[in-house]
Every structure is written in C-alpha cells, then in structure tokens.
Amino acid sequence: MNRLALVLAAILLASCGDANRAPAGLQGDAARGRIALAQYGCRACHMIPGVTGSKVYVGRPLEDMAKRPIIAGTLANNQANLVRWIRDPQAIDPQTAMPVLGVSERDAVDMSAYLLSH
Image (cartoon, rainbow, N blue to C red; front, side, top):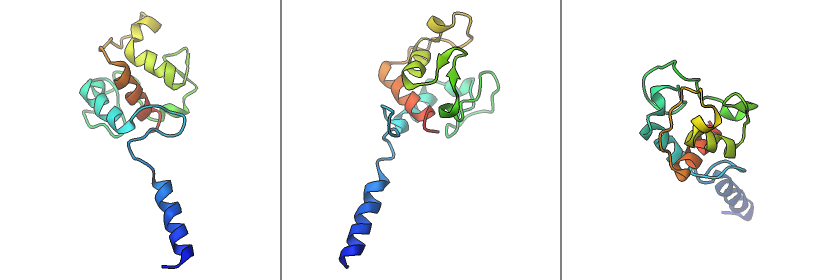
C-alpha cells in the first residue's frame, strides 16, 4: 500500500468515532441512553425515534430535540436543563403530567445525550 493510501485510511478510521459516544459538546453515552429510555418506559407517553413501542400521543414526540429552542415550555434547550427536566419535571412545572420516575443522574445524562443527538 502506498503512503497516500495509508494516510487516507488513517483519516477515515479516525473519523469513524465511537457510536456510543455523545456528539461533540454533549456528555454521556447515547447508546446507553436509548436503552434507559426504554427501561424507564418513556415510550408509554412519547414517540421516540429509535426506541420501539406502541404509537402513543400522550406526551410530545421527542424527535429533533436538538432543534428546539426551549424545552418544558420555559427552559433553554441545553443538556443540563434536559437532565433537570428528566430527573424532576415536577420541580420545574408542578402542573406537568410528566411523572418523577426516579431517573438517576447518569441515566438522565445518557438519555439526554441520545435525545439531543437523534
């Protein structure tokens, strides 16, 4: 193999990245977050891309989360606020129908990484 081919192969391999790693600027493990979204039963109320379940229309669909300017009606859309909302929605909006599910900090970070990358 010539030198140019080796350099190109190295560049391609470096750009592949880790599928479990969150996109740049996000913390957490997006693949683990997808699993956590299923384990906590989020699909019982929300349509979530890549998470299997029934078609439901109780809560807002969770596709294109990264494109939304706000979450929960009042919070700037960033990972820290999404983690806060996932962990304790009642503290942010006592009138919300979203229950407190006892989501751990790590699970909420991973869930937010998944939602903000899909």
